[in-house]
Length: 147
Image (cartoon, rainbow, N blue to C red; front, side):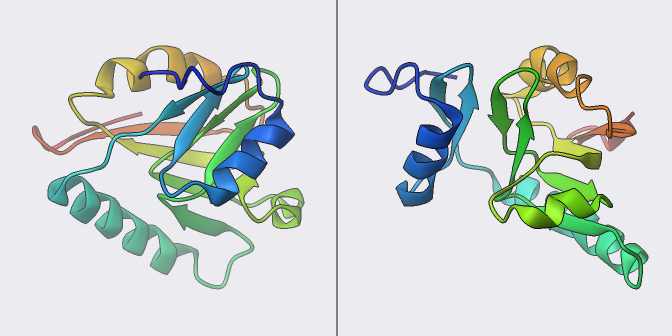
């Protein structure tokens, strides 16, 4: 990830305002913002299929599933990430439209450019979320799912 040098030491509120107007997505890590790379056809198909299965499974429950363009806020770490899929069952998450703070499940579809980060720092950061019960990594190249 490459930090955008023009946007150093932003507050979370400044980041959210910036992100609202930006044509591309950025993750936020301790005041720095990082442009996100685009995804591949395979990544989108895998993510979409998983989203559809979970959405159908959760129908009629109090839980909601979100896909691709919604951030997770990690308040203890001062980070915002864009996971591929989020499931939240916490009513407090209905108070915010652009991010969720209490996910129960986070799924990342691995790519060559993000795999080390998804397995390392991001995994460690997600462990600060008290609501998180499962962090799932999906490897579409080797047909493997890890929890």
